[in-house]
Length: 407
Image 1 (cartoon, rainbow, N blue to C red):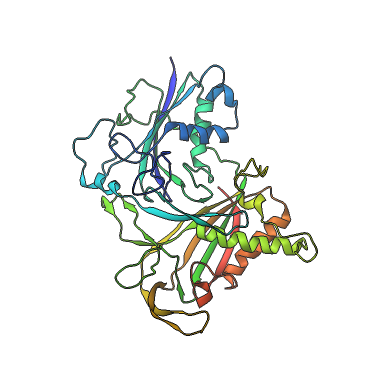
Image 2: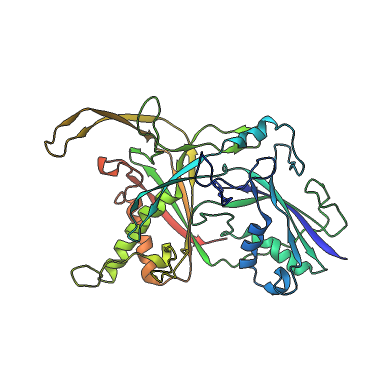
């Protein structure tokens, strides 16, 4: 039987969250792991994303009544030598031991008003940015055109894997693709030669790419929720995987996409309600811009909006100098300092440029796009502060934004 097969290596441009639907004593939502306790991505997750974006005869290729003609393997973690481990390991190499302790992201649930819900703090485990995975795509029968179309979907700017795709997780780039139509083993370590390069075609994207380039005016802090030896409040840092040197990088400054999304969401809602003259005084009320940012489905409230139409990406930057500020808590009744309530906060102090990429669906009404772009302008002019402790003067940025067709 004629068949086409591709071996594909992808690298995480942002951290990845593929949930395992389990919990343990260390975190509320650990990631999916294989038989060697290494992060993995189930083939069903990859198939689901590509099926959704496939433009051809979906039921014929991906199956409905007669089963699927395309087979996806699980995506296994790639080691520093480009190898995956399909067998049970007796002992992990130093590089693989990196993944024994993965980053933890702190979150809190949000109410319908877009603010933190009381007693709803939770955390989730994520896979390091820079981690590589390898998987295969096999199409039974001689249908090269459909095979190329499926593989080509991996080049889509909106291609994301795992959960939390609209708040920064799951963005990938392709490191390597090798294809063949000859007989080969099912092992991902089978190094067959690239017999037939797939024909890469341009993809008609439904998104506009907004690029936000900003520099801090002085200090800013996206809080980690933890302290260190210097301060009780510290910025959030995260390491990334360095395959060239087979190690983790030094700690890097992280601007979480979820924090940027929250600030822009509120300011976009302000501009949209202003343009529509929606105020409490005139009885129209003030609504969130759920058409852009989505809303949690809830059968009791008959909410059907669901996932938003904007995709944010986490931003990483090399760690630089910091500044520690001393504070004391104030008694709200007397206005004086509370005895024994001295605390410190550590902020990032540098003038580096931070590049934040945002994808927004093209088909939105102009009123929504104008409100969204006005929110971006407020960030670049210092009118919308980002991060924590903004009422103390932190988080003021300046810069510019641009938009192009996503490719």
